[in-house]
Length: 206
Image 1 (spheres, rainbow, N blue to C red):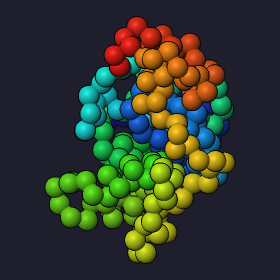
Image 2: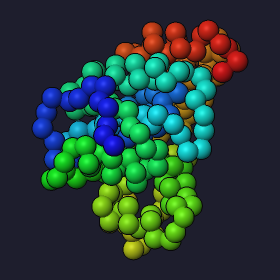
Image 3: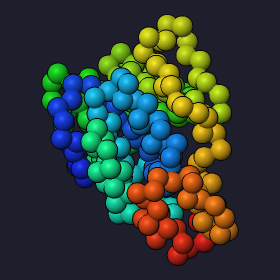
């Protein structure tokens, strides 16, 4: 397995933070989280799985989501975008490490709600979450509250410092705003306004 890069940052990186998501669509909150992760990482890879473990593709198509991530990555020189074959956080981190080769440290960006799912996911055997953290730290953004890691895992679960709360910004709210003709542009990076409008205006039921 190997990542399929849609856009690759030009700089050399030793620390990579992957940012997995459904991206339906990306928001200004996501961009703020990605920028905050650059305090730890040299490069952030916006990562789109070809399939999801807990949801289906609804709303924007797979191709439209690829286009949105490519535009985000091209807008900042420390952002990359890629498609991956795996869909669990641990597998995506391993796929990234295998693609980039030895000597690269890979961390995983997620929100408080996502890390709670990852920590309690049924991996088929105990200890997988702890094994993941041993190799790949989590970079966690507050989402309707801070995540409080167990004391023995605190060194591997790192909080991201955001400039403000983004609890009122979400992909769901963007889609709702487009569907009802309300405000949505302030929740989406300007570079994506055209792509997002084209992806969702055609079907206001989404």
